Length: 355
Image 1 (cartoon, helix red, strand yellow):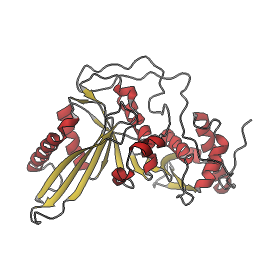
Image 2: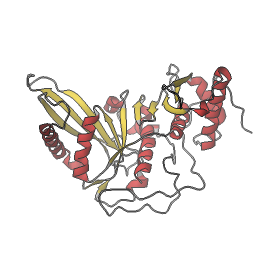
Image 3: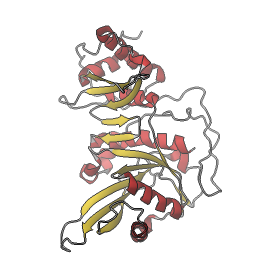
Image 4: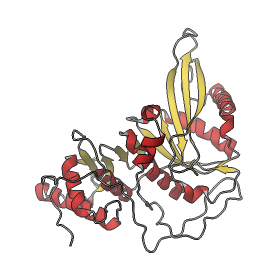
């Protein structure tokens, strides 16, 4: 039989490292729709059982792949920054061998937009440099296309020519274990369904506009539902972290109030993991039932102390030692060894939005 749940304040049992989680597929799953693109000729997905739209089909975090094939120093700049999430339909006629040419064309496009008065920093004479580069380590499988980084840097026209450029904006495309999409599109299309941006939204609009015109793709903001936030809370709680790791924090929004009110629920990471260990039936796999039970135990503990029903509120943010995620589609990566695993989940959400 299943062990009874413990309260978040109970002592933690001594256990080995947490297994890498993977979600079991539901017995009856909804069929996905074909990707939407500005260009016709997209292949329809094959007849296969897939999870309902907007949910995770599997939650396996391949730490070993990142540690073996990637240098954490090369991706350290991605950590501890807030990234806005977008989904992107497949890119038509994109070539990874033309990154230098793309940088030149995008730079010319930005200059033209500034001349029209549409770009940010209007009235300031800035020399904007565009850089495209490949991030080949950010892959979940051999079929995934290498991630691509776009950076905008500036130097004022009054600054010395040898002065250091200032990074203004960064954005990157990636696909981590996105076989469900890449296997079902023609060869002329490149699948990089997840886009992450750090910087002014006005630059996202300009860069996105150029990509849409050049590669016939479409950008959409990618929100994270409360249901998927609960999955992230459960999965990240089960990961092995350092003893001095930060607390697990859940933020809830209270509806139907004249003024916005958020409730922050902080749990010691060892207590949260001890609770999860009593809930999880099969090491390495997670089910919706287990996620629901995990959250119900947290809700019951909170109600016992504060007489507040968190089930009547909306979960809007999850923060753990692994990463933090907000329902508005904002992510912050905190540990490089789990970067690939988190990107896998986000890739799946992006694919579910464009199919």
